[in-house]
Amino acid sequence: MPRRSHQQPDLPDPGLPSDGRRRRIRAAPRREPRRTEGPAARRLRARRAAAVPTGEPPVALALRKGAAYAWRILLVAALVYGVLVVLGRFHDLVVAVFLGLVGAAMLRPVADLLARAMPRPLAVAVALLGSILLLLGVLSLIGEVVAGEMAGLERQFGDGLSRIGRWLEKPPFRLNSKALTDVRARTGQFLSSHRTALLSTALSGVGKLIEVLTVFALAVFCSVFFIHSGERQWRWFCDQLPATARGRVEITGRAAWTTFVGYTHGIVLVAATNAVLVGLALFALGVPLSFPLALLEFFATFVPLVGSPIALAIAAVVALALKGPLIAAVVIALIVIIGQIEGHLLQPMVMSWAVRLHPVVVALSVIGGAIAAGVVGAVVAVPLVSVVWAVHQALRGDRERGAGTGATRARAH
Image (cartoon, rainbow, N blue to C red; front, side):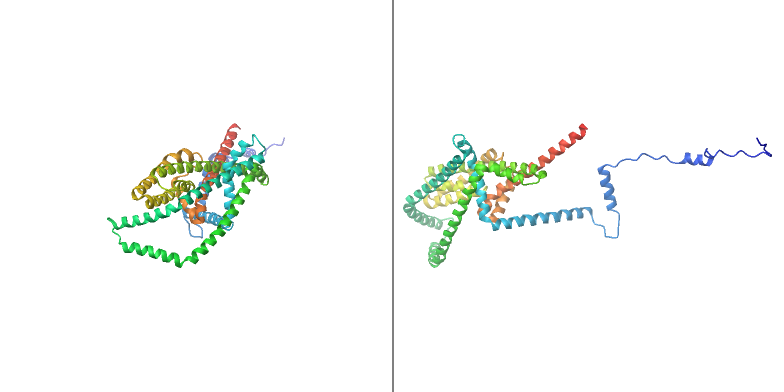
């Protein structure tokens, strides 16, 4: 080995860190392990990032949310308005389909019962023809009752009007007899001067009658197929949809039909009960035309909250003209009593299981339907709102069940 000529300092080993590097290594902060952000933290960070001032003027978060909801609400309102316009253009077709669904809801159980003893097409024909004959029989009976009492009713009605006039002349009303006579004279002049207009209205009424018969025939035609093969038609409709949408459509269809059938059965039962009570009360009070007035009460009950008081008000007017103010007052009291029975006994017992709507919602639906489509709209509004609400509840329940199943599977894994 060569000898070192002079003493040289020991060189540091390049493989080892120097003292300065050691101090820097010791002073370096420890890196904490990276934490994963949850959804709440990500939303908070995004909200803070959105709140950073930019070149645009700042907009409050509530205003941005309100604007987002506003254009969506406007879009839904435009869609609903478009649907109503289309339905208005095909008013008779919509009414025919609705009546066909009502007939199917009422006669399907009868046809199923008859199908146990005969072929199903024959059972459907017997159920439909039997119901039509029953309806025509009731209408012919009403016509015979009215025709038989018409002569006596005209005289009684005239005497009743004279009695009401004399009653209004006494305290506390003290109306002038000349004013009442003038009103009668003006009424007669109006009828005689507008005879041509009344005749044209009657002729247009004949056209309306033809239209009503056409709608009724189309409703019967739809009822035949709805009763005979409604389930097969629904399955065919679901098969035409994408596979991803069939489950939800089947859930909504089942909920809608169940609610519609329950509402139809319930409203018919309530209407029949009201008609029986009104008919018995009017017959006990000796009011003429008690059977036709009871039938009017039956059909008027199909307009909830409004129809029954209107029918009983007509009965009160008839009682006032034919039986005097005392019997009319009893009929007016009958309006209150039957309204209480319907609102506190019949509706909760019969309708609550099928229709779970607040009375305010029912009232607004009836008024809105009447404004949109008259009497037909008032009749259709409540079952339509009930079906929409049932569909919403069914879809929400399906989403909650799906979320619960997903959470259970996640916990299992």
